[in-house]
Image 1 (cartoon, rainbow, N blue to C red):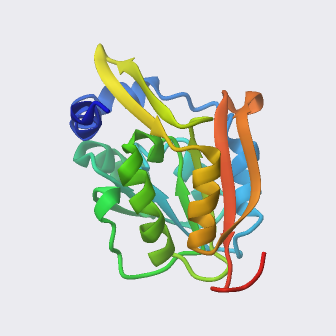
Image 2 (image 1 turned 60 degrees about the vertical axis):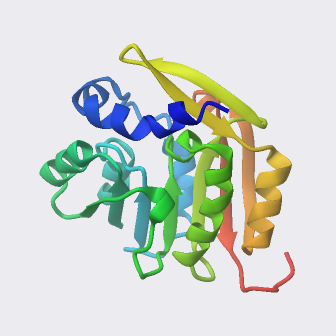
Length: 207
């Protein structure tokens, strides 16, 4: 494991926030999955967008559908862009690994963000997801298709990704009372993303 590469992700996005804003596709290939997520939300529900980036296009779409959004990102520059573009939402600079907002949400989304954590940090995140959820909260995130690490490039710098095995994700969600309602590995209609959609159940309730 290249721990340095995972630790460098936060500063990489901060340094290249403007480049990310310019290059991030906004064609919304995510829409079918966002619509699946929305089906589990109450009208006007409150969504926690973890690793929200610049807010476009994901949070922007949710806001346009009438939902409330609280977005967190570790990059102050990206959060500043969110505040400028979408002042009606709540934006916070925060490291998802230390998330402690003291409230629960109707939906929790970690889109193209969770997979930048190393494997051990990903395991720890499920307790934080659970702490911000209540029975009925919908959770959606994307990962790699199998356990391992992958290192890409952004603006000429190494950009780290990691994943656990599908079996371990399923086990972690069971441990924290998230019932998987849909899973797709390398969905071609969503640019090859591997996606997880789950709903928080009452503790101890059978699936």
